[in-house]
Length: 233
Ligand SMILES: [Zn+2]
Image 1: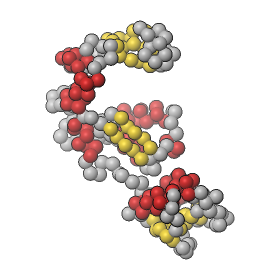
Image 2: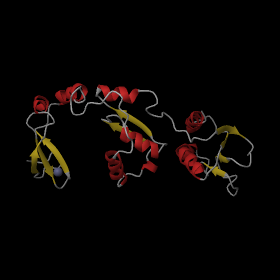
Image 3: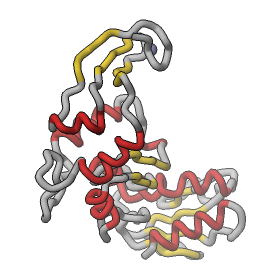
Image 4: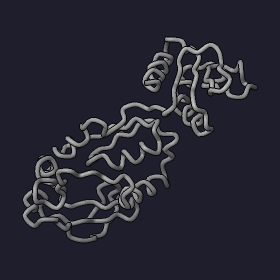
């Protein structure tokens, strides 16, 4: 069998194991092949995508099925499964440098929530077809929509109160303790990308309050102001 990516010869691994024998209606008689040069396992023949969409939207988590979600289900972010996925992803993704994650087929969103719990600056979007998971994903409080450092954030500040972390743009106070710049060169784009990082750093240092100077309402400054407003709520 030719690999679907690189077309080199792949080897037969196994028959696809169905959870429920009758699901063969949706999956067909799948065999799994493995390509060593791509490190890719793939199904052959590829099941019909319309049938698969129907299956995962309506049947996969239906009542009495192996993946049914019980009524009062509360997921465990730190399940062994989530932690092992997270550890694996961390071997090749530095989440510190990631701003957006699109989780395709997120299920209940628990893995994404775990990542977000650890890296609160990341914007997480989840895409899920399946009805029950979707309901859970949409439930209020399921996902924190915006980053908040968890300590008071004061905007449009002029005077340092001598105990808060003071965040500003430029290098005017570069030698002063408690002052943190978002961009030495007063570049608003750079400042925007440093905002959450700076919040986290400041919080790590143990500050109990954040003061932020006035940020110009132009270009990326608009996004910065927007984020600060949300973070201060
Ligand atoms: Zn290949």
